[in-house]
Image 1 (tube, rainbow, N blue to C red):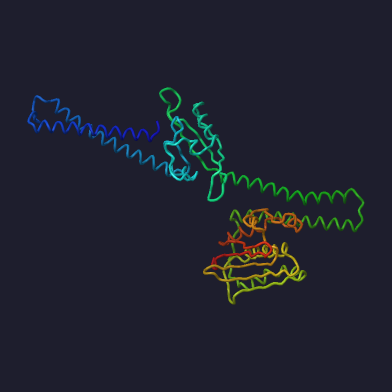
Image 2: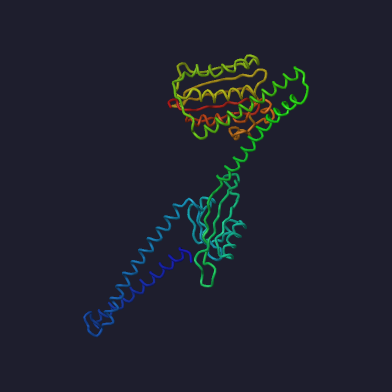
Length: 417
């Protein structure tokens, strides 16, 4: 029988016995008042013994009540502190007890005590797990996938469910079922990210390696004129550089995510920093006729790791030039002080970013224009590196963009590190 029923029965029995004790006491007092008996009468040893027994019974009932209260408090404290969801059912699959964690897991508006599992969860798989526990007499474990409504959308959640029988009943089987729910949604999400990451890395490595192998095979097995040989070598060199960039970015991303990169904090003048970040792109800017504007308040300076911040800023400038390059492209770098934070904005008037892609652009290997990105030599890791770099610097990165109206990336970080 579940603990809650035991507590209720104990409390009910104690209340009934207390009522009986009070009634007997009233009757004895009534006899004493009428003079029919007295407390020292030798002829009434049974009455004296009864009074003593009743007194002992009263003491015992108070002790039982105290123990029941303590056990109830301990049980509720244990259940409320558990990170797992816990639920107890009777043999008819009605819910008798559950903790707050389970209620939060499934976003139940109120405790569904007294209702059946099917009424509350409407999940046949969960029902089958409970049935197997009763039929087999042994614990069952399974993974439950369920759709839960959050605000205006549904999300898929994964739970590891363990079902155990509670105390054998008089006629065999169990009097109830204990269910323990462990939320493994994050684990499954990480597994999906890992699989996708491995698949993306494999693809990114396979493509240039296949090209390199093909050209090398041609050079080894066929007579190729010097001009063709040079063209092959240039192509191979370009793809070798792409492979090297991919491996370097993977290593850098791994170090950023693990927090193993040391920081070298120095005082930086904002104007000089922005000019220095643009220097490496001068050939592209001059060749394409890109208009560049730098807007920085006079005397603005801050403390941070110049190398890491410049790396993040360079990735954003490179993206703006690579994917927004068109006649009349305008690139703007602006810095300002917002309270105790420095805000850097990198804006362009390029094609912008589709709204559906904006929540995902900082994910590893995510590309808005997949074909164009690969043709341009992109690895799909640049914006992910920017995100983790800003986190390492105690800041953040965000984007504001409307399709066809350009994009603005915003780097925010503390002025003093």
